[in-house]
Amino acid sequence: MALQTRQTTHQRLLLAPNITLALEVLRMPMMELHIFLRQQMEDNPLLEMDEPEPESEGAAEEKEPAEPAETRLDEEWSAHWQQSTSVERESPDQDRDELDGFLEQQPAKPQSFHEWLLLQLGCQPLSPEESGLGEALLLRLDEHGYLDDPLETLAAELHAPLPKVEAVLTLIQQRLDPPGVGARNLRECLMLQLERAGAGGGLAYRILRDHFKLFIQHHLNALAQAMGSSPQEVDAACAELKRLDPKPGRLFSGDLPPCVVPDLVIVRREQHEDVELNDQAAPRLSLSRTYARMLKSPHTPDDAKAFLAAKFRQATWLIKAIEERNTTLLAIGRCLISLQREFVVHGPKALKPLTQAQVASLIGRHASTVSRAIAGKTIDTPYGIFRLEQLFPSGIPQGRVGHPEGADARANGAPQPKGSGQVSDAMIKEEIRRLIAEEDAHRPFSDEALARRLAERHLTVARRTVAKYRTALRILPAHLRRRRL
Image (cartoon, rainbow, N blue to C red; front, side, top):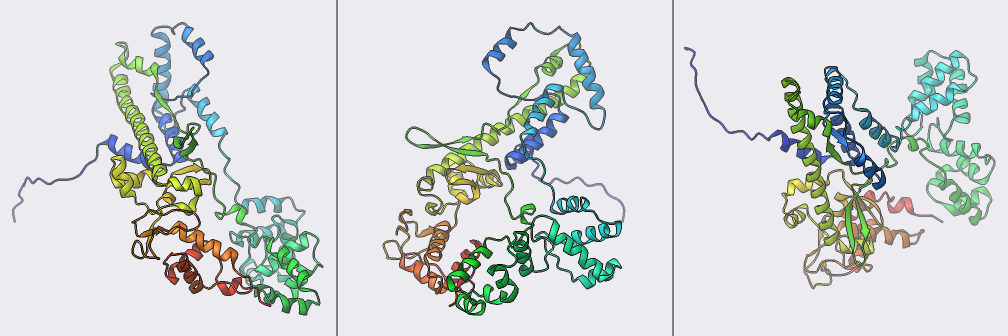
């Protein structure tokens, strides 16, 4: 077959660079946006962080004479030109100072759990052999501080005598913080914490040591009889045990939420609530007047002008992308507060079922734009910081409107939209939480009983849905909540 040349046409969807940049900036939460802008400022000399200054200082600066005509511009440009050819370039001193000031206000990177333990181990008077064994044991701990591997197996792997490994583990358990680290199970973890607190001979410690199974099963009367104590004393001891930390390493793990800088803030006006951008954290960029004048100067070399023109376009696109991001976020936030007005008054229990398509139609944006804009964004409310996704609760279908199981029933003072035929999952979770808080500790509600109780409040929910929401609330099932006599 002979070679042939053919010309074909086909269609492809290609986004312009400025559109791609706008979509990327719209997706970024506040902290990620700051990091991205810092990188952009290092690569683009025309970008400057615009910080508001006092009027007196601004007025004084305006009165200062203009800088010398072309000599200073050439010197600044030459310095930038030399630095821009290197792999890593430092930004101008003013930009660097402003960025350093912002970074100083941000929390430092937290020390990892294992780094903290290894640092403490290094302060102990140990021999080189014991230090090596200690480091090996610490690196085997899981994120909660537990040692899951049997000591016999570890001793064989480390080629060390078992008594030596046990001695090093005992030192870790007794001297390193947090208390309870190095435990091999929950029982040992709680006992170590009591020993560190000087309560090694108390009733709570003896319950763990001798009757841990009865404690887990909440057999208070059986515990009182076995310990020779009154039920009140056993109840107080169990309450003391519940105040201990079952996961001593979680302060260094992902169980605790990281520091969050909200993108939006709910503010109280004279007669209503409004939404504003977080001005203290929102970045403001401007174009460098120095390099802008250099771009217009006839004395600037052609290759330098070409470089500045490309950077000028990129800087302009970025500033417009940030403005579009802020405008879209503000429109979504104000629309959400308008639709979820009861949330501001009654709290999360009053959230109404809402979809992103509804908000998109009201603010004149596409649903995909709303989805990208709210991803990872947060809002500061009177009830704490919420993810914007949480203000879009899904709806649970109810009975016919007007029927006793209709969605226009009101639960606990939180009105639902009439005629919607749905209630929000936030309301269901709040009702489940309230029912469990009011239940008899000796006869807790099963998931089926909770579903019946919700039906009495005109909330139709399946048992499996109740179990799913109870698990999401981190509430134990009934047989584990029961306090047995």
